[in-house]
Image (cartoon, rainbow, N blue to C red; front, side, top):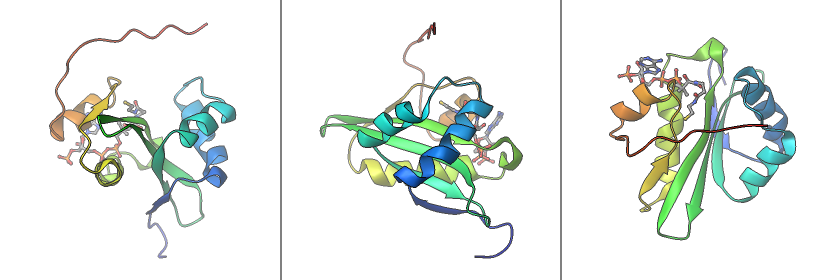
Length: 129
Ligand SMILES: CC(C)(COP(=O)(O)OP(=O)(O)OC[C@H]1O[C@@H](n2cnc3c(N)ncnc32)[C@H](O)[C@@H]1OP(=O)(O)O)[C@@H](O)C(=O)NCCC(=O)NCCS
């Protein structure tokens, strides 16, 4: 692997610690056990930099063959705008196979998802306590 290169790998339990760093960076509430549970229900990919650090995450949660939810899409702030979000989404499409895809988008995610053909179908309000 060359310096500055970022490679995608299957998301495994060893990547949870790095994933928590990313979700905390976004002020998302997920604890290691929340990532663990999401991972048990999903397939996913991580982006690793040349130091082995997790710089991007994506999970695909299948609902049988009916559909799949894309979730936990995060790219490290330091490497945004370089096509990594799109690479992770391509990986998610491969993991989902023929299942129709759903996702809940943040305002940050909307431009990427709209470019990939997703259209809004409703609004979700999330309350945390
Ligand atoms: C959303 C996110 C994953 C995008 O990652 P990224 O690596 O910067 O995205 P990319 O560089 O692959 O961008 C893909 C396309 O979307 C566009 N895009 C991405 N973010 C954008 C923004 N904020 N405003 C306008 N366009 C944007 C890019 O211009 C690019 O278009 P192009 O391929 O035609 O050039 C990243 O901003 C992020 O982690 N945000 C915080 C977490 C979050 O809210 N995730 C979404 C959860 S639903």
